Length: 193
Image 1: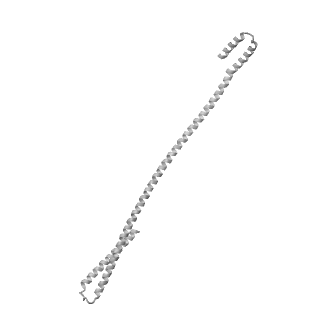
Image 2: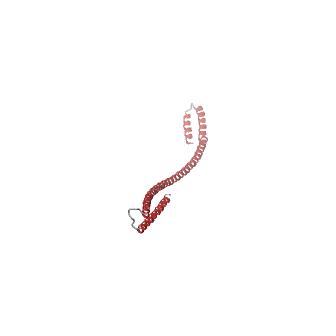
Image 3: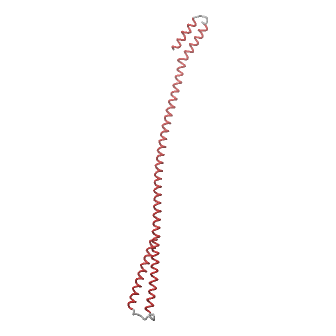
């Protein structure tokens, strides 16, 4: 847009400069051809020369105005180009920062996912160990119950029967002195069992 305006302004400037040059050439040719007129009466050539000079002055002013416009347009275009480059640089910096942030976020997500997978594996391992411990505990409890039952059968039942026998013997031998000796021998037998 600005480049088109610059080109059209430069084109007009060159056209006007060419016109000025042509008019100046015509003026110099006419001045060279015309005889020195009488100063008292203006001739047609003088009037025409004055008209041409006015046109030259007018066109020079126009060229000057167009040159000023061209210079302003160039300065404006350079300023806008600088602003656009600055904006593009800032946009690129923001884009780079966003890309970096996205990359960092992806790495963080990957790290969190790995940590989550590791935690799941650890939980599964702990659950498996808990199941195994529960089974071992149940087996140990069953074994303890079996041992208690065996203990009741092998140790406590003979002790009960011995106790009953002893109490029957003790009742029958309360008066005799040998009862205390029998009691001691009976206790030593039961302790050996």
